[in-house]
Length: 435
Image 1 (cartoon, helix red, strand yellow):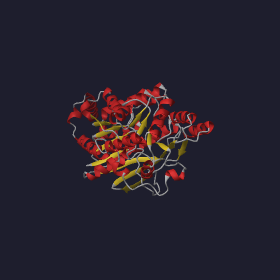
Image 2 (cartoon, one colour; image 1 turned 135 degrees about the vertical axis):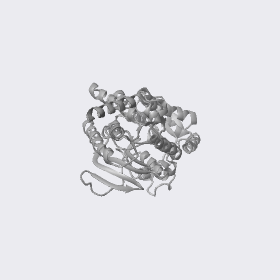
Image 3 (cartoon, helix red, strand yellow; image 1 turned 60 degrees about the vertical axis):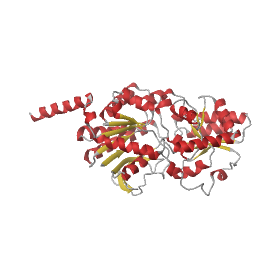
């Protein structure tokens, strides 16, 4: 089977972005399938292609994956209008491929929601099976964060969400809340599967600590607790919580705890200025690093930080890469918002799930981690064991491939009332044209 795979922010492990699509594509290859990956140029990603663009596009083969990269540059720190324009341009360019490429099944993964548009065209204009993977609920999350308030835009996004879900042969949700959100749109449970992000144990077990130690390079002693956040510095991430905790720790005189923020995003400049204004030395910022470099960096850390704003929709509606990256290297996690990840941490003793919006609770957990290294090591052991179980990428990718490739079976799909209504309209239109 040949899969036409749409992921605007695709990256190999040489980039600083998530590698779920790369790993899933490689699993498809191992199962004897072929993949054409369609993507844009993400500032934190690395597609592996280096040749010049020709007419806004370049093609090549990376680790057996056929990659089509559009010259559409995207960065999280760009303004809303610019980012929206790139989303639309990517969707339009992808539609052309969906209508002319040779393939058996179309697959699209968010974000953004517009990633599903080429799949819709593949479904209704070419009769191709279409599998849609949902990583975030749109427009629910932007509405909850107050990022998008225009009722016309929200209404249009809601319509696109409904059409995308109902056009898909099958859907994948990355968290319990996403699965529930898809079901609320009238998609039968038989066409939805939850396959969350997983732990890349194989990638994170490669090699040992880098020769140029992160601690040594940044004057962080082995006796100091190093807590690391690696990811986007955006509005959704609520990284002021780290600065608030840093202030609390400073007031307690805890110079033995360092908070390192690795990455970039729309909020980073403001956060850096706030740390300078507060004269904090225990909160430090670093540039993004590739996934391969991150493996050695995290081995030098004592604790991984899973941070998000305290918004109810985040509790069960996200499946963050960084959380599973921490577990992959056997790193305990400190999580600062309620939901399914907090429950997972408590149930399996993987770290600390602290009260949201509480610098005191956050600082208390960090202080406890610094003072009881035996308990912290036990949490790390639990994290490593958990990562090798049902949350391993190897296990989950097998489920993913089975679910996606079974999307060629259309019997259940054709019973859907929406499918029946559209096909009836198409047949009526065709009959009128023939007259």
